Each structure stands twice: as structure tokens, then as C-alpha cells.
Length: 189
Image (cartoon, rainbow, N blue to C red; front, side, top):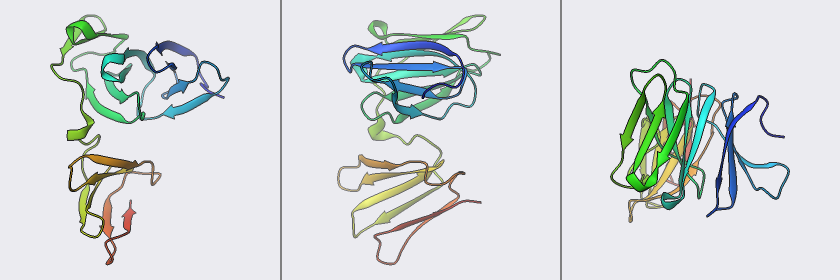
């Protein structure tokens, strides 16, 4: 099982031996080309997808939807590294990364060019607006809640160690740590 609606574009990563597809449904599917079913489904877009571009040198791929939301994904753990919006366009119709020149080009009635000077680095950012952050001295971890997920950071290194995804069916609005500082409790409206 895979896409429920038409597939619009596919990209292949020679380095990682995966196929990535997107289409009129709002999900991105990751495929092992030797299997007849997808190995991962990525959610996060709210409109039909118009394109995918792999940047193997940065271990990332980029997706864009018709309303201009662009997402940068890790090709290693399939987490969303960055989300931004193409401004002042009514509809994005395509995207193309140009790694040699470190540019991402989006197409609509006109081209928009985004230049990046460094690889997208998950180590120093959170994927969603932060709702709550808590520290556990018992585990030496920092828990950061945003969207429907909690990102767990190592307090010593300052780097993320895991992401607890889709904990609730709606966005997290509150997060606390129990008295033993070993369990997190999340809630939503």
C-alpha cells in the first residue's frame, strides 16, 4: 500500500539506495526499490506535494507543496530538519536543488532562489514552535515539546538523542515531569 492519489514526482538517492515519492496526497513515501511496499511514510504537509529534490552530499531531501511549504528532511532518520514558506506566490509548481551552488529553486509564475551557506543542521534547532521545555536531573535530559512530538536532548552534549513522534492526535499544549524526574506527561486540548 502506498499513495492513495496520483504520484507527481519521484527521486532516487544512489548513496542511500532509497526511492522517495510524493503526489496529490499530502504524504511523502520512502521505498526500498527491491520491495513492493513503502518502508516509511512522512507526514507534515497540508497541501498536495509538487516536488522532491535529493541532496545526497548533505544527507537530506527536500519536499515542497502547492501552497509553498518547503520541508528539509534527514535521509538518515527521516526527521524533519527545517520548514519554511515561499513568500508572495499563489502556487508553487516545482522545486530543484543545485548542490554545487548551494541553491534551492522553486518555480511558480517566477523562480524564487534560496541560497544556503551551511548544511541543514538538526543539532542546533527544533522542528516546531516550542510549547514547553523541562529538565530531568535524574536522566540529564531536556525534553522539548512542540507540535505532536517531544524532542529529547542530551544535557551534556546539547544534541538531540531521540524524538517521540505523534504522541497525541492533536498538538501538545502542556508537558510536565513526574516527581521522580523519570517520566514525562503530555496533554492537549
